[in-house]
Image 1 (cartoon, one colour):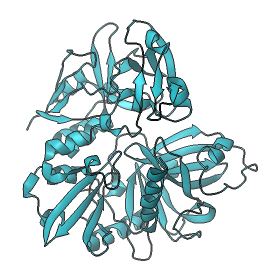
Image 2 (cartoon, helix red, strand yellow):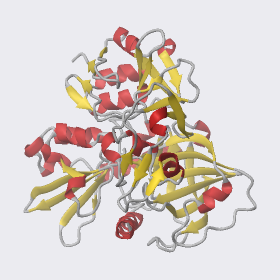
Image 3 (cartoon, helix red, strand yellow):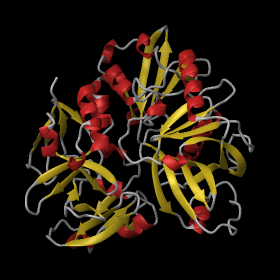
Image 4 (cartoon, one colour):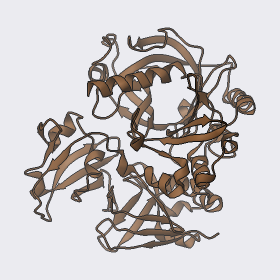
Length: 478
């Protein structure tokens, strides 16, 4: 574990050196500043910010402990970190929220490495108002600390010690607007290329063994090679592509997501393996990073026991009552913890359990007027777009079963898959033409029923062969 942790720290140190030396991404042919994500945004935060005060700098960080000249743009569902000196910019997908955080926990929960965090006794309340993730792991956070706005750069992954690289307070800029930032980004894109998206990744992967260097020409990259041509392309969604060039040819085009690690080629996938292999690699079921196995009673009942509540998911998780009596997590050193204890100590996440194929955990919205539940994650699940498999999240599909079997699908995620797979017209329909009467809010997200989609020309065929309520096939007119 110690070697893995220091490998992780080395990787993130390299990232810190290039934090403001990365390139902009366009989510679509439109500007990132005009993000089309249909989920709830935070208009009160929209604007451009600059660093005001350095709150904390981790002693292990290679970044100098000082205020930078970076410009932070918040708009739509994106966070943009831009340099105002002709350097590069980087855009990140950001989720907005208003989650109360215990001040003592903010200080101690994630700061067990690299020194003591400053005293916070003068503050009265703190809310996390936004965050970005890479493959389900925290990356950046926005916090409202009394009247101040703090920006936090995290390090660490599930199952390792979490911490902060850097914490700064932000102040809103009065002489630099989002329009100015858009112009800055456009100029950088003309000079350096646009930032890669997962739509671009899938399009390149469809070429398989025919991929050439020219396929990467439109995109900006970071040169991370030392004596070799090794270029890193960071996508807006989080995963990155590592391109190695030998003799003027593509020697490696490796997609890195989830729990990839240095030197472990099995934790990445080469785009030349083709679209299906790359899509399968992005399956959330593959995101379990912690080594453990589950020990539990195989018997089954129809009674459910409350297991865990997630404020972030706005959901409660329930476990089969018989299994709950003897459900243990066993780690490689044979340490055994009760499941709820392992969750409370953040030794594993609820997602780690869901993808372990035990088939006995229900995910139910806390506010649940329709009385249904989420399909969750299961290796048996199958979702198709015109015959091509795609791999959604645990909350993509919501099912009601009381009076009738009916399925609902998260609008933002359906839009994203349609767009990434190249169904532009259907994506636009989902984004702009769903009537308000056909939109249902479930766990803070917008959903549309299979029947509403059918009326809009997107056929949905839901099979019921498994308890997962799949396979699900979306038939898109072409």
